[in-house]
Amino acid sequence: MTDCPSSPADRLASVLSTLRENGMAARISTSHSVLEAHSHGEAMDAANLPGAVVFAEATDDVATVLRACHAHRVPVVAFGAGTSVEGHVTPADYAISLDLSAMTDIVEVNAEDLDCRVQAGLTRQALNAQIRDTGLFFPVDPGGEATLGGMCATRASGTAAVRYGTMKENVLGLTVVLATGEVIRTGGRVRKSSTGYDLTSLFVGSEGTLGIVTEVQLRLHGRPETISAAVCQFADLNDAIQTAIEIIQCGIPISRVELLDDVQMAASIRYSGLTGYEPLTTLFFEFAGAPAAVAEQVTQTEGIALSNNGLSFAWAETAEDRTRLWKARHDAFWAAKAIEPTARVISTDCIVPISRLGELIAGVREDIARSGLRVPLLGHVGDGNFHALIITDHTPQGYGRALDLDRKIVSRALALGGSCSGEHGVGMGKLEFLETEHGEGTLSVMRALKNTMDPHHILNPGKLLPPGRVYQG
Image (cartoon, rainbow, N blue to C red):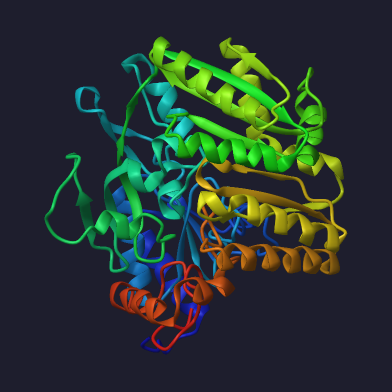
């Protein structure tokens, strides 16, 4: 990286001066409360005040900011809703936090072709509310009020991924502003193309280190004619996991299958008022499609669950009951936090081939028992992804114990052919596992891409890639 003679503070001042000259003075804030709100995401200890926050309203605003930051070697990190959990939005010293949350327009909806184009600051919930009358919806649901641009950045997933896939499968194209301020469009509206490099997939999951996404072309899906949900409880965790594995192996097109272990279920019963259930390991199911297809899915799933010692099925057929169940699942983090309100909760995020999930969770429970920590388990077991919510003291020692357990869980997942993150991304929190997972050769290629596309290393420095020969973070 080329050295810049002035100090970081002087370079930041030059950028802010340039932006004011370009008519953006009203969109710049150095208020302490605004800086603090943009100093961190969720879950991690990592926080650092940016030098300034700039609020973008259009792709041209983002391009203007990046041109100035590139010229003066000032770091910039994109900020949406701040819901990321691995330190993705924590800024470097004297950085610009570029807030895209005002970019909430739906640019176009092509109902006949089942696609739409939206600005990056729009949330999934807002998109679905606005397109409800079309009979379409966007299915990727990471749970929080994340923006669609942020979901692209982390290659987000969620409870419906077992049927509809992740952001990777549901993004057709992007508008991206490169480090230099150049604006490019990748992909398009067609469902397949065999021309050129797949740049869309390159940027989805790049965590704002190669460019900043400002618009997203999304696949939409038809709202199912029939939706039904069910809950089955198990006395034994392994029986629940085996049920999920067999459902997937039998090819049943289930919409969701979520696991909550006994600790998490007890917490969710208290926090979400899930009356009528016992604090036992539980699977939540959702079925969608034509009435006959749903009936067949239900029959097959119930048979598999009962053959694996499922205790009974409880149905949630009304929209209100289904909403209550899935809200309880999405509120699992807060339910776990309510177990010890003064403690902190660290969420892990591992994924393995589904056939190894039982082996992984059995080993993780041994690690939990040895740690002495209280740790609810839950996950998207239909695709082999699960989370351990580690409850620990709000002290450096407590945080250290949680990280030690997290490392053991990740090590088990990697040894079973898995990944250190199924949906949360790398950020700063998973950097130490990247070489083990990918190997030095693969990381060298990633660093070379970073070095080429962002030669001054201004885009979200210190995230996604551990330091190496051509990239120092």
